[in-house]
Length: 91
Image (cartoon, rainbow, N blue to C red):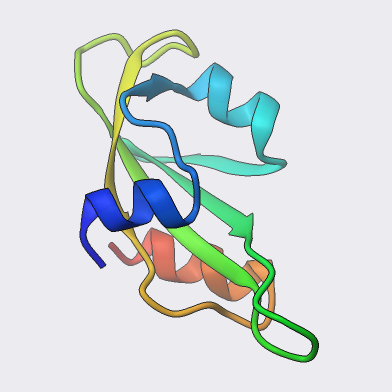
């Protein structure tokens, strides 16, 4: 999935800051030099609904107000948020 497709489909912000992500999504983790996110996107009854996304810092400011940008989003949805986070961590 391209960045623009992910921005539209999952309504992800970019550029943004980690503070903004943490107030809008409950599953945001700082993992080394990137942030990983698990989000929920309803696909219908009994279908996988979780996606993963990876952000990276755009400046040397790695505080909660430092600029970050979307770098990858999963093309498939997962059964749970743990698998979505695992996918994002591997990017």
